[in-house]
Image (cartoon, rainbow, N blue to C red; front, side, top):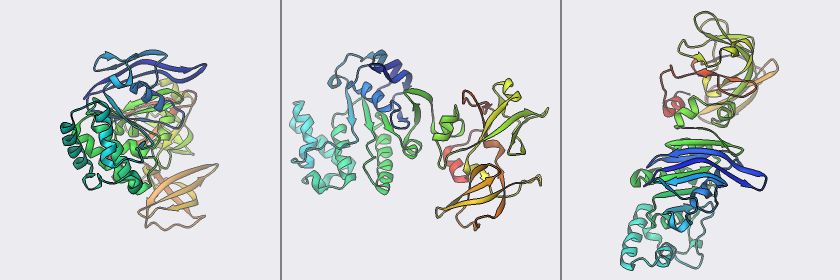
Length: 379
């Protein structure tokens, strides 16, 4: 196992900046997910960790050792690519044994390790098969097994599940998490899929256009996003962003949005007092909007414009003046297009962002922390 430090790293390709001033610490045993849209620099960052790319500036350290100029084979890392990259003419056993044979490892010791890895990954009954006789999930496990046989200090995974169907991705997510818990090997995992990030990571680092925007636990990323881009990227459906104002009524903050005033919890503070004097963006997630009247008797109402039944839940798009708001309802809720319904955002999970910088304005440190599992369960 290893710790990793990425210190003010840049990667330029001519005049194009792929990674800009990336600073990130990865603790020993972490499962860190680099998350972001295509072209954000996450794969380039992973390739620099592997030694397949060299930083233009900055330093990369593994266990305190600067590895900028260390060849990939001498970094003691194992990388699993999006493509399985298996030898089609070799059996599963042959694919697993190929690396140790090239490294001239002891044959008896290699055979014992292959047996152990095959047992851990459920490949024991498949060792005689060739890749063409395997399912996508089985091929992915062979690719993981090949990496495990190196017994590396660091696992690097580049969107390894993107070629699998939805059901198999869910199964493989569970298997990878279980494997990480058993082995404890520091892992850096690249994906654009927020579900993979939220369900697998111990920490998430979100990148946009080569820049790191926020790093933290899944709970922190979800409940306390650093800016409007992070807030809208995490969560499905996306967070509703609406024009509004923040003000202080003498005792607490109040959010004015869509002609409705929402007193916010006393524990919330505004990081920038000047924001109380200007327009801001108000955010609220669909899962934090209840389709019911406010206890104050002053309900905010919207007209049902679109209904998305999902089985256990239903997402409803409501038209409020010029704005569309998405809210979550029970799957058994029955509504009709054109119906006017009351809605009530949860004041504890109302967000505010600066119009110019997109920075989160509300200091939520005074609120009681809520785990992602509890948030999703209550949503």
